[in-house]
Image (cartoon, rainbow, N blue to C red):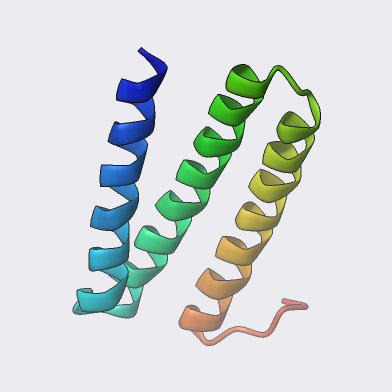
Length: 85
């Protein structure tokens, strides 16, 4: 079951990389980057289950927070606003 989940996450990651590389608009690329961050969190959660080590969950939590902040910053940049607005 875990191997199936890892293969689905890997396939999804390659599809996100394709969207990032060939996205016609910057918004499409931003969505691809955001989903890729979510997939990294999924990989970390699966590695935590496989290896029975909790520090992978800490990495997943930190990655999720940084991904949210990065997506918000990129969205503000694409709108043409400054970060303090």
